[in-house]
Image 1 (cartoon, rainbow, N blue to C red):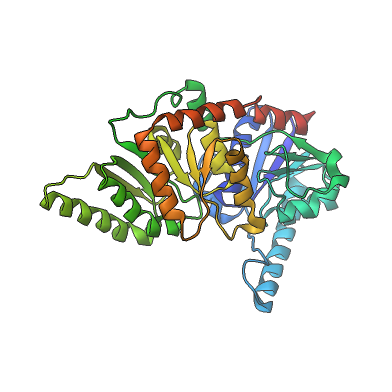
Image 2: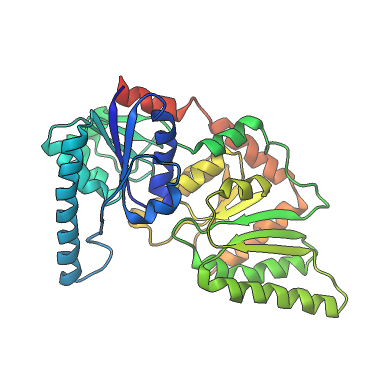
Length: 370
């Protein structure tokens, strides 16, 4: 039995792969997760959890913010020293996010073997910094954009770590051939990711209602921000009532939500998903053989969301729509085509199935414990 520390940022994109790894590692090893406070809502099943403060020096501009973030990192390094000194791990795994920085610094200082995990197709800032010093860099994508050739011997492709509930969906075969019939409403899930996607709540409702008025039957499950629920809900309800007054009932229903710890239940029901392009979101949908329309966050660091989505688009597993003035029109056109020709979904599903090779979690554990 080994003692292992997993350190990661607190967003869903960082924490979900580590939850998947934790669930498997804890069967045979003692495992601790170190992250920041944003991750607490995801970690109710984690037995050994430590929260430390984290602050990106690049999140805001200005000297005051830089000094504040440097102070927070310094405090986190002191806390990390005592955690690691007394826990005495055999292995540390860092999967990005600024909370990983102090933990990896102390691991290096204490000469503890550490691995890095890169879930995106572009190397993150913290992983860039520690790449020369890590034992191995394990990756979710086979190719990492602009990867320094001199460290090629450190890079090992293991695949994307996906939470067990999504792997179970795939194993049960619930999705393949299970899309709704031609004459039924198209079930659409709109996901904003753990950091939300305000733009989906602003630009897509009118497009969905435009489709409904063209006799495209839709059933929506839409994630919105807290301050959007009333506005978006009222917009849908008012248009439904207006259509009833003129005796033209819309084939349209909706359900709004802000957050769910069981997003897999929404995914099961959906025929197609509209989402941002964080690596964990895309890999979980791919694991579940669920076709998706990927809309990369246009200001993501190093444009990593675009590169994540392009990986799947290049293999004809999804539709890639950029976040610009044409976004709403392009999504409307895709949805109408899919509603009228459901075989388009089956084509994407078949290509998603072809992507699967081996077991990423087993690959990962074999690398860090051998």
